[in-house]
Amino acid sequence: MQSFWRNPDFFRCDACGAIFRDPFPSEEALKDLYERSWVAPEASRAETGATDSGVADAIAGYLLRSTDSPSFAGKRILDFGGGLGAMAAALRRRGADVFVVEPFGVDYLTGRGFKAYRFLEDIPAEFTFDGITSLEVVEHLPDPTAALRQLSARLTPGGWLFVTTPNPEGLNAAVSGSSWREAEKPGHLLFFPAPTLKLALERSGFEQVERKRWPIRFPNAPVIKRAIHFLLQAAMVDGSVRMLARKPAPDQGASALAS
Image (cartoon, rainbow, N blue to C red; front, side, top):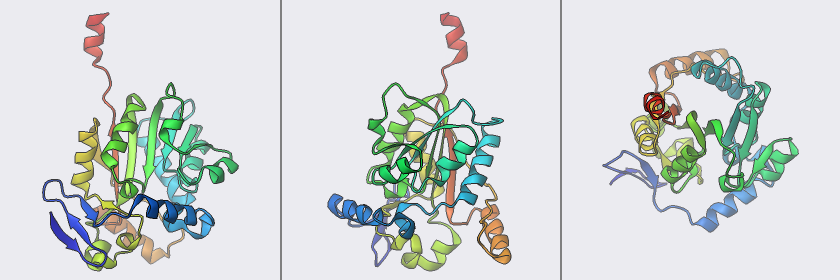
């Protein structure tokens, strides 16, 4: 590994390219951080979820087009690390039967009418999902590959997973270094350049892993800033890595022969 940023200290793995905080905060420190954040969740969006409804609506629309679905009616979708519920709400508006996992925000999300769970293991094992979203979550996880494998196990064959995470190779990160706002957030443990996230998804059993170049419109940004966002997204040097992947479906040919 090589030193990557200083103050806070991050290192980069030579083998896979992952960028990780050193040292990791203790489990107790992370628990304290999130418990304090969820006391006033709307005022602590850096840790409880910064995705707003406009961005979530745009992502939901692109997901429909990318998965060739007219709507999510009849689909069971999990929002893993649902934050304040913006993505879950956007999916629900499009007809999905939405479940949400959010370890410290269960009461908040239940109060908003969602089927919310503290941990993935708390959802009955017989429930599988047609799709899973996980926005700005993997960077918070001490063992993200294990989490991705658990998510794969809960998908129906051929189901999809959509993941976003801050882009450590974006223009902002390149200019700001360790002062990049995402690096300064104490809950961010790891960062994934796009090839690293693709590798993690493939190692977790996914296929058809594709980075999405979607022109997400940030509704509260001034017009000039929106134009800059579009240009950065087109060049894939914006602040987010977005990946859509599939769980392998059974070999239909083999199934036909077996029958």
